Image (cartoon, rainbow, N blue to C red; front, side):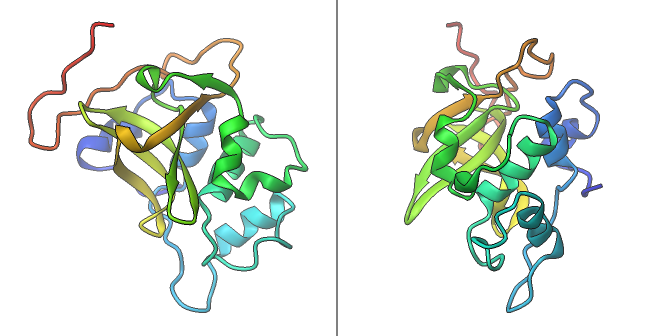
Length: 184
């Protein structure tokens, strides 16, 4: 079990209706990438379980896609083999496309970055940012703020019945003011 969330994210410790994939992700909260030549055992184990250890030599390689993959696999949303799962951009074709304005807790967000892309989970939002939770964020599994303008794609697991926890979650803005709720 991962570290408990504190502060504005503490609600994740007790929310009973989160999608199974996000529940799996939360189990790893606080996992840190090992610095230096050593590798983080859990990260390397994920590569072995997913059958990509031959393409994933160490945890210095970006591992946000690997983290998304192990969570999707354990929630039965990913069928193996899926050799492109290490690529964050590959997740742009997974699940069901969702308009960025309609993103909810548990949805998958993808953004571009120098040298590739980044994949993460949405756990909330305010006026200008999504609260995102994922792997390889500051070399750990943790929440962070990502500007909405940087998100290029949002995907949702192909639920037959959408879990109650897949809903909008509004955080206060970074300056402490309440987030405006869109009426649309």
